[in-house]
Length: 520
Image (cartoon, rainbow, N blue to C red; front, side):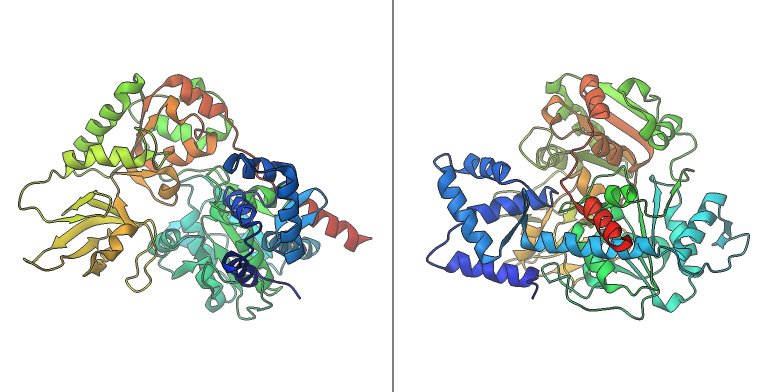
């Protein structure tokens, strides 16, 4: 009998509270490896990770603890590849589902009119082809960069689905689901919610969705291996699964290499190439975002008023971003500062917020404020990001709005966050403050699924370890009109050339092996 995620967590908790906590450091290291994207590692690589945390750890002691965890069923060894048992089960399940789909990838093709209209606007030829592909395939990928009409396409797919009442729209995160609902007018949920599960529940229970005729996942670049496994196991064979995303954006914070793996397997796909988002006056920005895959060096980028690199010494970058951001925020512009790092450097989100906040929203004696335990202060009218889902108040991790504080003498202040769509979740205690942060600057990861008129971003030697092609691409494609980069041209050139780390996954190989076995 398969032990799912819940059972694995129970066993880990039992181990933690037992007298013999053998191997807990190994489980923590494996969790970190999974969060960084790898489905598996090797014994030798795992030992090196563990030894970095404990210089006194011997290889013999490590192997004994590893053997104990393997015996307990918490880890799984497949040849030279070491998995958490849950990740191994997810990979096995996803491969089996994909092999089944690839053996019979097509469904009956519905009749479509020659001209498709959405909100009175005629779809382009490539959009028409994408609708046809989505409705005639058991699994399909609709790919395209920012602003290529993916949202319009979603509306058309749902409108022409043979069973519209059986359509389920979802996204990997609450923020992405909210954006999908706002843009399409259709109710969308997180993948976890669509599956009827909390994030820590077991995806791989034998539950089916016989009523679902179409399941569409937006922002599919953020999908994890367990999300893919859960979806494919639950949908009936007659269901159309449509994954919509941008393959050049950042991958998920979690296990898996989902979009690249599905493309390698030859899952039916179409790429939208016509850009509708960026302003036609933004020639440099349009060129750099739509042709990014063909650009290999900084010298290939087009620089103009819509796409600028302000060359600066390291010591001057923070002040330049601070002043530019403050000017634009005070002018009421739709601007966002992005950074690869959340903390640790002068150009991290945390430190950029620290220097921008007093310029944009200066404190004064009678101004209402909320003090955090670590000494930070939120002021009334601060730009705030919610960092944890709150179902009761219908706000999501990643929601950004304006903080409003109402304070009475000798009473705990009430506060709310005014969100752009009109929602205004409120609280009457300060316990929620640990799940909020100032948002004059946010990470590139947090910006996924959002768009702004202008994006400001540091390009610093401090950030070389994080500056890779898909991070830079994700950042610049958030802008509709203007991108301003501040810093070092050599670092920009290096980022253009750095291919992201290829995550360890056996999904492609296992799927192909199953196909060969079934064909034999």
